[in-house]
Image (cartoon, rainbow, N blue to C red; front, side, top):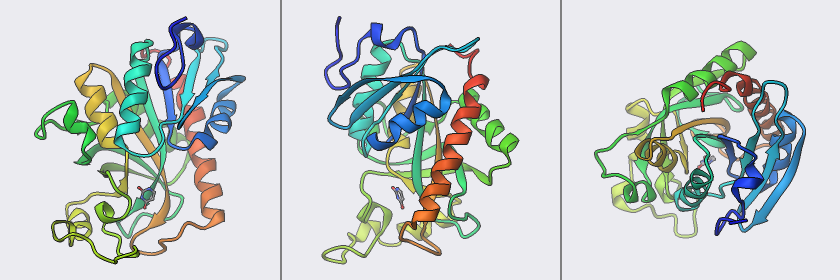
Length: 256
Ligand code: URA
């Protein structure tokens, strides 16, 4: 069995799965998998922990694999899963909202991402859009609407860094390089909903490779209200993400 370099998975492990759910945090993989159905552990190496959600009545198996933080680690995960036959990639993550009408624990479904990363440039030139796949995104929006979960749909900014790239001054030096000073306000004025760190790489890669990518994220920090994540927000945010991802499974069965 040919196991891929980093994710340590083979085609046999995936049992014909064509969809991957991608949390950033390895600690969220098992819970995410089990909410969708009976599941078993596949592998664990570095930031890549994986579980397989078994095929059910009329349902194909689904792999849940953590990506770690940031574009470079996402790119490895997507490349290796794609080589094993995965076509649909749905990132489920956490995010910081930058608009005042977005509340803590709200859900953001991203239609596209501002490419504040470096990794996406290794897959397509800067003028190429980081756009989510329409069909996967429609399924995510339908799921959040049917569940009545408060949600927002639109543009996300994906930054390589959590601190300067998202214009945070609570750092050792308190300095943000000049070209990033005022960037948060600029994204706000341009209607960007939120910051996170993986979407631009995922969307650029999947589009460029003829695959499908989408992203749903729960808001754990608000740059206009409360910056530090609170435990009750984290719990609610995770619950809402889990509900949405469970509801989306049946909606994407016809995408192969
Ligand atoms: N993830 C981010 O990248 N930024 C935030 O503010 C919260 C989560």
